[in-house]
Image (tube, rainbow, N blue to C red):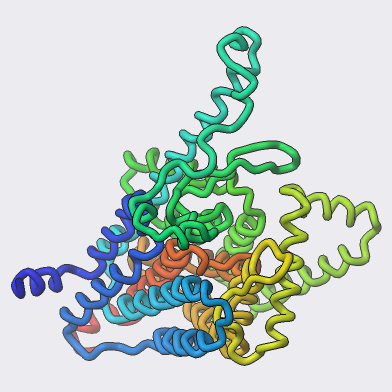
Length: 469
């Protein structure tokens, strides 16, 4: 038994992590996709400790995450609804996952082969889900197409105008084991019964709103907005005869991205691309800052002009905001107002978790990562949330990657993913889906490790190392 344990601990940590990511569709089928990450990452961290050749490194980002976990635990003392302890454990598990990922990647050296394994594993998981969702959409369109033509009307009925295959498709094995009290909750119901899409409407058109292997469509979009930029790096490391298949997978991912109709995720993806381009083109740092601040000023000026715009323009803008129905915008407004009211009551350590409020469709503290941190963990939680984001920004925005083209591409494109994450966190909470949060932080850590690898290889050439220089 001891030999088997020792043999397992000699497994390369990133190989184990790559398989953990590659098997994500299996975890989803079993219903353990929300709880598998912490145990899996603990095993990877154990392999890092067992194989260490030097003293363990305690990175500043790792310390910030430890402080954030301490604040989370302290805020748990202020939870007022007993059923919300399940939500608290879920949120805490995502923080533990990010902490373990930072520990793993700051205590090993990322090489090209390991990076490719991780990205290929993520591409397989997301690509498989995207292809299945494309097939699902085709299956929903086929009955409608048949019903449209009179020649086939005799073979169909009016029921075919409804969208099939929507909502829960099957009960997961874990769902069969969950107590009825948990299955009856909104979150427990999503774990117990899995589906790939829901029927929704956009501009009064009924369609299949995809969510893939994730909890919600908005968080599926969030995962895609963070993952697609980094997956672009695989183009550099892929042979020409395989690039056609890679293009097909990219197309399926973008098709899924569009059918999530998550407007903020799509906007954050576009903003991230612009910022990434700005910081990766060869401009002096002063010019980059001038352009960035200029863009922010234009954004604020545009918002002010819209506020002062004629009524006709404001009406058109309001129509755009309520394309998915007025309920989405109205509900979010009420949630944010309740969130700020709750923060005023407990400003320091917050309420520990989200909290149900009378006559609100969703709990206070939801629908925003930054506002959620403020509501759940108070000013201390928000301060650490901002510090973690700022630390990532400082490292990724000012990286000058050179050397291996694939690792350099990962280091450069990680800024795109980070900006998409930060912008999207204004209106969505990544912690709501453990898989979305896990993939986001996996990619950030890959970007940081790639940045360190190419920077070291660029600034300390091999011939200088051999001479002791």
